[in-house]
Amino acid sequence: MRTVRLAYRDEDRTPVIFCIKEMARQHYDVDVQIVLIKGTKEYEAALFNDSCDVIIEHLEYLYSVAAQGKRVAMFCAPSLGRGLELVIPAEVQSVEAFRGKSLAVRTSGRPHALVMWLRMMGLENEMKIQMVSDNEVGRWGQWKKILSGDCIATFMSDLYLPDALAAGLKVLPVADLPVVAHYAQACLSKFASEKADLLRDYIKAVIHAVCLMILRKDEALEIVAQEPMRRMKITDRHELERRFNSIVKLLQLKPYPTPHAIANTFEIATEEFGAAGINPLTLWDLHWVKELDDNGFIDNLITRMKR
Image 1: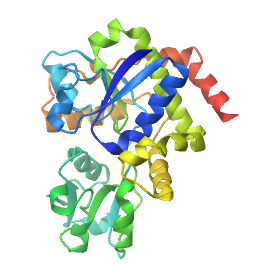
Image 2 (image 1 turned 30 degrees about the horizontal axis):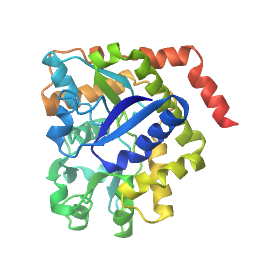
Image 3 (image 1 turned 120 degrees about the vertical axis):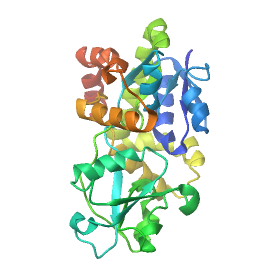
């Protein structure tokens, strides 16, 4: 069986990753070897020191690497939104109350995206930014700064939302920020050219996994309730399903990026990683996705899985 080594660094990604692994094994004769790389520096080096073949999260740094002459290919984008929730005090009714107040911003996970979100809401120059690390408040615990009165709002992953809601805070619905988000993938251009047939079949598995999660949730959950559930340290099936649904609502069946999402992602890469002097489109190679779309693979798969 042919092999693709897939690297990731956050256990919250494992529901998608293990669905890809299982679809690749069942349908495309590909063994997806899952490689956990925790350290950011180690993860960002993985494509270039032969620790993996493909990465599945945090691609922004690749723009600056490409500007230095290294050749990489981004080849699919299953999610085009940050998927964060805007959490506020129960008594606040609209973003108009934010003016002159502070937004608690997580120091990790592309904080510049939240500045862009404020811009989208017309508040970029109307709010103060308070950087708050997970080390201070716990993973995605920036909502505690609202309870203390230091801040009026924070954006947070809804995977970690229950504690904030239980503390009396609420979610204010706002439009999502278009970005190339979780589960987007990249490899070296050399790998893409030398193993094009393998990459095509791997991308089939990615699309198949997304279709499974969206269209056949019960089957996907049986996969997720095994190793991913253990890795995420979840013991309650209802909590697993809640997190699963939070992931699925961000997925799209045809994993194309949009110009707006690419532009926003490139701005983040420019601000946080110093990417400059490069056309962001040069990193994208979507011909595998387009080929599978044009020849009917995706539509036929969707039709078959809806039965």
